[in-house]
Amino acid sequence: MLIETLDGDIAKVNLIGRMDILGAQEIDLHFSVVVGSRRKVVVDMEQVSFLASMGIRTLILGAKAVKNKGGKMVLLNPTADVEKVLNDTGAEAVVAIHHGLEAALAAVA
Amino acid sequence: MTEADAMLVIRPELAEFVRIADWTEAFAQATNLPGRTKFAIELCIEEAVSNVIRHGFANATPEATHEHGIRLALAQGESGVVLTIEDDAPAFDPLGVAAPVRAESLEDAAVGGQGVELMRRFARDLAYERRDGVNRLTLGFALA
Image (cartoon, rainbow over all chains, first blue to last red; front, side):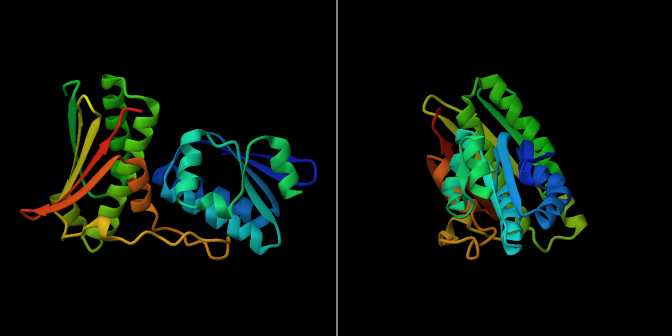
């Protein structure tokens, strides 16, 4: 997991690898710190090769944490399989998915 | 392990997921499995096995987890791949779990409970059977 800060104080979190149970556990603490402290968060999913329900749990909890502080978190560029998991669980209805960085940045600005 | 099928027995512990990942990877390589099918199989294994560990073996002592196992089997046939998951936990039919209500807002979004729904959507066939003290979940996958 890598974090960049973009113009407008937007935190871009680049998730890498598998967001399965073990992957979600690995990033849990670090991710919590970001969503606990930032109001504009773009989670770049392009390098996420796998997503299961524990990973979705991390994402939804993160989105709630950011929203509770009056901010917004969105997801960026999931692969087709990962996006299907997000759709099938209804996650994409509550945490917006954007394809294209500009759209994601505009959504949280 | 033949090209067509493989078996793995794990203890009902989350740490065993590392072994599962290696095993599914080996099967995928040996059978030239399409990426989408591999993804679907891995997802269903993760959801099913974590349900078994969390619900079936919820009250297991550390000693008990070493006596019990979860058996995974993969077999490739002409029409697709069959995944079988067997455990000797108390009877638990994961397909009896009601589908979660889809949330309209982030505030309402429940966390958790989507595992069975994901299995229904990613596997072509899904069946549960309890026989001789064993829970058996059978999933079929088309070759994507």
